[in-house]
Image: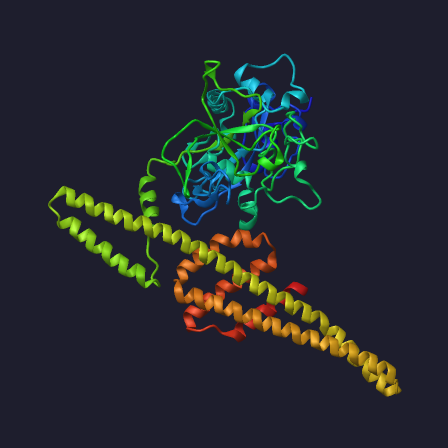
Length: 538
């Protein structure tokens, strides 16, 4: 029997364990596709459950979240799967504090029969076999929620240090919200915005959808549930988000009403389709309302193709003294930027409202003024979020123009030795009177020289576009705001390579230089791009 200590299994997450939490199940059963960054939590009877981190970084600290557009464009059931704006945020940060929310955890696989059994029924006579790792189905939503509660209590007693921590509070297990589920099913921030909106997450080169989704087609599951982890994962490393078993989420069902959810809470929601669902009827937006009770059977609703997957969540308020920080964060996201004249005028209005409220003797008048003030601040916060997103897109475009100019410089540098060699050949041929070699080498030389000129023209064009972007940013926004947004995208830019990271640093420096000098120095930009190119070829 393979034995894995929890200290080893979760070393990547920096957690410790107790002797009671030793994992003895075969890893190939509970985690058939191990990956860097897996978080493995122990279970009773030597069991384990694997989770993946779902990043939700934001630039607004404890009050920040990530805006996401859920649903599907042009769906023939817009009241069910229609587009709607929503938001998602995790409770946890890499430093363990509650001041910078940055991720949540979602189970890497659907809840398996063996995992459910050791919590709900106790330890079996012998270790579970592979066939016990199909999704557990035929349970009510309440039974899944009871499992989450009992598993959390067991972890708190037997492996408390294994649970992630947010400030002063510990995490707990629950069903994911509908927003968390769809955000993760689409690939979260591991995919580009355009890919996020596609019906299915992007596939690895050379693979087919049937290698990721156990659907109802004869070339796929054909109505049979597969063991967890049988197929390939999505870009976040999550298996069977679509297909195999449908998955119950915690959020009650609501209709979609033109960009938002309707106010009536209905039954419960299942997502993802199952092993019977035709592939053409399944995508990341597909959702179903399920009645909590089966009126014919006079029992709770259960389905032999509906299961669940667990999430690790945390409290929104993570310490007793956080109230002041949260209030401050709310003020900051609705704060004006010194470069925006409209916002300055709006601030004058808020100050007038505040003065009127202080002088008002009638409580109803004070309440009305407070509503007006809150409405203005909420509108500003929403506008600021859109503003920040636009700034980040422009900063990314600036780094792209820089990167393309640098690549053109690198290509031009590669032609220099060829031009020098051709000049030497022509000079030697002239000494020898070799007219044929002179003609042939001259033609190649002219092509190389034209290539350099074309590259120089491209570089000049990229620099013009880059300068225009930088000029517009500094003209419209304060340098403090630009630095904050550049810092927010830094990790994602760095993940695309050292050269792109150097471009972001350079852009940040050019913005500061433009702020100080009052103009963009094109020669400085050109020299800095050349420096990045030279560093790349050394």
